[in-house]
Structure formats: structure tokens, C-alpha cells
Image 1 (cartoon, rainbow, N blue to C red):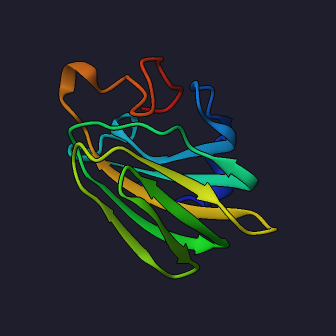
Image 2: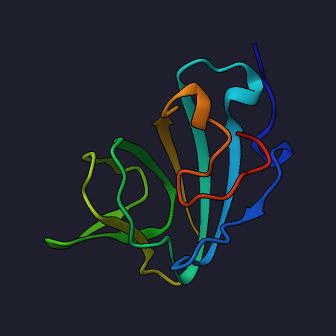
Length: 130
């Protein structure tokens, strides 16, 4: 079991090619003995975005603050605070802040598998809390 304030999770730069003005907090991960899912909070500054990428797992996101656009190969779809977002597996995508204030969203993903659990789902580098 774990209960903590979100600010107690370290705020880390997303140092993946294609990411701009984006930080991440690993709120719950395998390090916490979560067997199936990781919950992350992304903080994206105005004009910032995650990389345009794809992978074989889904994203389930909840927008806490701000507004933005989900960019895909099929175009852009706007979103705002309190929206929920489902990104299909293998869909190339990017979360982009289109507002003038911080955009924050929660994103839950499955652990790909036990052997790869220390890898960053945004790239091949290891992360501090996964």
C-alpha cells in the first residue's frame, strides 16, 4: 500500500528525442510493488509536447489542468481539463500543450513485461522510479 502527496514523487525531465518542455512524475510503479500498471503525471509547459511516438500498449489519460491537443497521424483532437483520453495501441501520438499555462495529465500504462519494466515507455533509457 502507498499513500503520498504527488509532489513527493520526483519531478524529472523527459529527456527523450522529440520531447520539449515536458516533465514526468512516476506516481505508482513496479518500484512500489504495483504488479500490473504504472501511473505517471506529466507536466507540459506552454508550447511543450511529448515525443511523437508509438508502442504496442494503450494509454489511458485524465487531464488535470490546462488544455492541449492529441496529435496523431489522423490529425489533432483538442482536449481540456477533466477530459479523459484513450490512445489505442500502435497509434502514433503526441500530447501537445496548446494553452498559455501548465498542462498536467495522469497517464496509466500497463507494465510491458517484467524483463522490460525498468525501461522508460517514452524511450529506451532507464528511469528512476519504474
